[in-house]
Length: 179
Image (cartoon, rainbow, N blue to C red; front, side):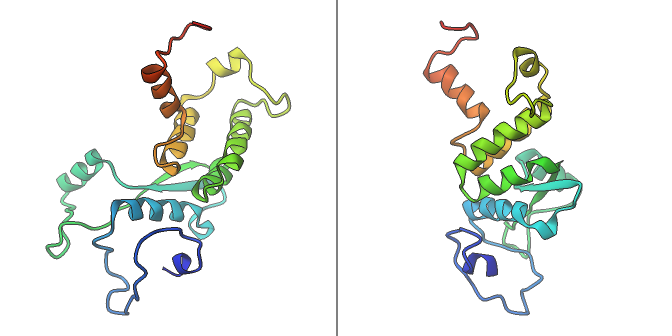
């Protein structure tokens, strides 16, 4: 709440006073959009990161919620039926700057940082570009991370998967060059 009041956390959630009585209680009744923003804010907190790894935070998938229920972890908290559960995902530390740019809405900087991350992953920083071999051998895991970060922080507006969907569905895309 302090970060929201100071403008570090841009959410439409109502700022409420937290009494000592509820300080360590689960957060209940939060809107989905505010929960997503909270996850984005967590990812920018340097005090929650380690020097070797970066943690990204997200809401659990339906399958993860089902697996939790099978383990005896329920969603029910004092009969409310909903509370905030967050999943921490470990990603390589070289994604920290990209997360910071994306989470603060600095999309031009994030775009430039994405290029730098891609070049770093492909070991092509010195050259400043990729050739076909580099593209063919680019690690799928890094491609997935970059895509998921862009999709998450742009609210589904940007990312490789979004571009592919537009290309295929709306532009009749083909894998053949210049068709």
